[in-house]
Image (cartoon, rainbow, N blue to C red; front, side, top):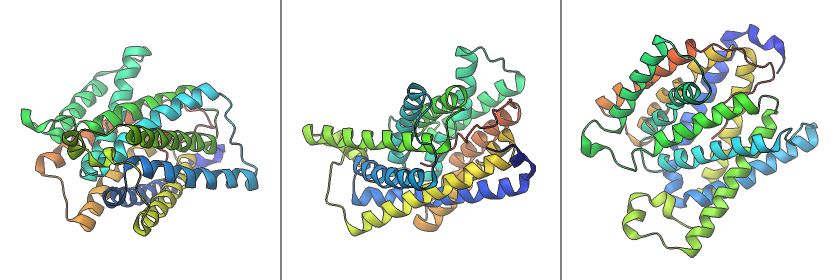
Length: 317
């Protein structure tokens, strides 16, 4: 990144907002994808498509794709890809606003993990933010004892893994290029897809479990024209979004721009309503607002010195 980028905050906000609107739309298509094919097939085919495009860009634009630190990139790719397996898998059968709110618990987990394992000192405001975020998670999952299930916790598990990805990005991958990190992520997602398809080919998921998580439990099916179209739309949307996000982080201060990313939840809810007529209930809305408040407090109270060549931790799903 060049150092001149921090002088245009309004343009940075616009670019990140457009990226979130893009992701809020294409992530809603996962419900349609789930009607056509399984999660593992989607990730494998999309990874092949995106890695091919990235390799072409690297070849013809002369961009670096080889990691400087293989182990760091591999670990970061594992965390991020695992997070996206759970996140996009849950998006296939849960409301996208609920799923997105689970993913956006990541700043809370980052703060807690940093305090427990890296000696980061946190003050009263950020302790309060963690408490608010915890209340938001409980409201989204369901405050009644019977409202919390293993399925409903999947988005929060995605948030935990995404937090580990963010920590790995900040601590170990600051010197890597955006293209390197993108290629690593999608290659890992492709490996997850191939592994999932292999397991399902050898082992039949019990019917009671398959009924709860059908998107996760479906093996390879002949790709339909609808599926291929959705694959192209989602892959293209993800690449456009990361381009907008990367440029946005070049032009704006990181802790400020990270707050703007929370508009994703509003766009996700809007597109969910526009496409499916689905909206979160009142408690769910309160929970989403609580998580937004929590993340905003953490972001604004966690201003840190960021390497000039740091890339955005919000990379395409």
